[in-house]
Amino acid sequence: MAFLIASIASIVVVLVSPFMGQLQAFLRRSLTTENYVLLFGASLMVAVGGATLYAFLRVRERRLLRFGALAVALAAGGGYLWSVSTPWPEVNAVERVHFVEYGLIVFLYYRAWRPAGDLSILILPVLLAFMVGTLDEWLQWFIPVRVGELHDVLLNLVSIVCGLVFAVALQPPSSFTWLLKPESRMRFGVISAGVWLVCAGFVSAVHLGHENEVDGIGRFLSRHTVTELDALQAHRAESWKASPPTTLRRLSQEDQYLDEGIWHVRRRNQTDGEEAWRENLILERLFAPVLDIPTYASPNGNRWAAEQRANLEARLEANAAPWVSRANPYPIILWPKRYFWPVAITMALLLAALPFAIRR
Image (cartoon, rainbow, N blue to C red; front, side):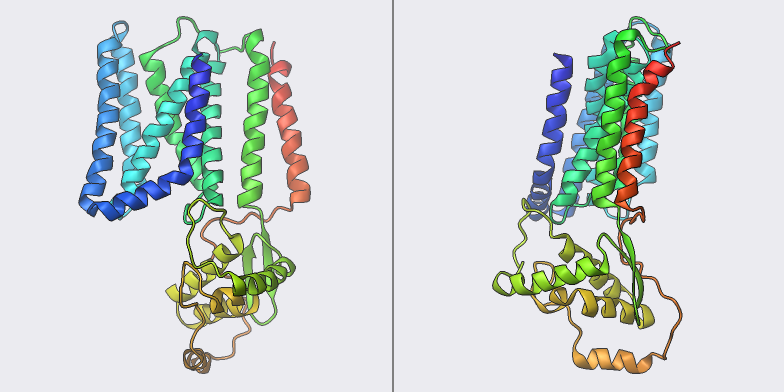
């Protein structure tokens, strides 16, 4: 039953993720920034304060050690939230909710595995909560405006580890061994391999890509080759004529071609001189529909006026030096998929077999 509860909670966290953007947008429209931040801050205080009070009332044995572990978990969590804080209070407020969210998930999985009393009760909850975070970020990557990347998945590990320390301090196992018991080996291997494959799938979908070079422009990173971008450009130029993407549908699938075009528009608009010129050349060469056709990100298009373009071109001197775009907002890994997946599957098989290889 405990594992079922943890699984249901995990499914809810992942499936609710697309709606969180709508909820946040609604709250931002309805509340001032101060009240928006206060709402999330108060929710965090209630959750953490309630958990701490519950622990204070429940812990009766080995109080010094267990309260010390609880204090470490809370201090580490507070330090983590402070270290990753941004200049935008509303962003920080949402990150704090995620911290509590994944702390709860790992606590539920710990309760499910706790009777095993071996090493699996420490590792499996972390792996399963990490997998939930990966699936959450993966789904966000498909949703317009939401952002999902490996960096965010790894940051979730901090909240997961803090949640595990809190869980062990609150409900320590009645017995424990650092070895894997025979009944734990199979699930340890299967879950480890499964989590690895989910992470590999996420990296493949989000981060694997190509370094492209275009004569007269330079190099840039993309999830597509130049040939693929040419095909996507022709397709969007035709399909967007009849149905331009002017309406943001938060529960639809993200158009990754449009998203990459917006990368270069943002970088062009944030810079000047040679870099802005090169970014604009990339857009003219491979993302012309993003320049000319209205979208939800830019109702008036993004093409420079002829005079603006001519003025910048006149100010620039001929420069044949190598140039690399820095438009991609998250890392693009240059590892061909034809090598990536055989290695990933081999590693999954090794992980599945590892607990049996070291059982003695």
